[in-house]
Length: 314
Image 1 (tube, helix red, strand yellow):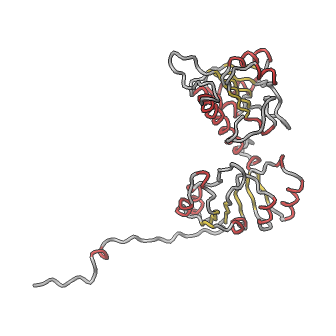
Image 2: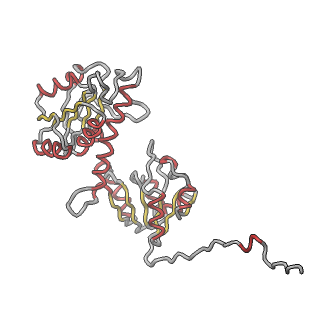
Image 3: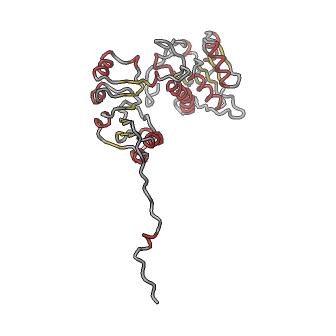
């Protein structure tokens, strides 16, 4: 006898995917992530993983199209994480909570709705009186990354950026030093039978500590200068090894600069970084030696330092 044919096809009999409802929580945030327009700014405040964590907790994230491209995150990465993507810049700026890396410009402030919240690296000391008047006019709550404190009184955002700056300074110096036509052709790495690279670090703060950590990891000889004995003692403890440390005595500093292949400036000041290395001291350095002045945002601790960008190195 012939078996009766099934009313279902073979495909319909296979197990099917089920879409479960994600319950939204009360008090959700509506976060806007605009695209950074400042020159050479490629960062973005939230990665797709961070967006996914926020969305899973019931919050909404609206991101401007192309905002993550500089950090190698596509719009698809963000939509898959649960964000909404829009090409309308004004729509993104109309969100009640905005996250930006660079401080919003006066033109961007005009697009923000009154009584909104903006969290950004506001760079308060560099802003004009008119800038704060515009923020006050719209009754905006502006929170600066650099003033967010931990329970113990430290500034986690500033420390993280300092750690990045210290590590990056050594990596950039390594690249420049080994480049033909710009550096002296040496390389980090402590190659057998070859004298190690000499690195001088001026400043024993967070930037100096992480620059020293990276340089030591690459096999360099490191000398650290600072006028604070406490900082020099702390950096020895944090590095968990004995390194050359000294106060900024001109005789010792000049001797170290004459022999070094890389000099990293990492000192800070209340209003301006103190000029520790003058023009005459720079002239006595090796030909092809690399100077990276991390404190250039506060005027620089090398007298010869000039503000430049990543595409045009002096």
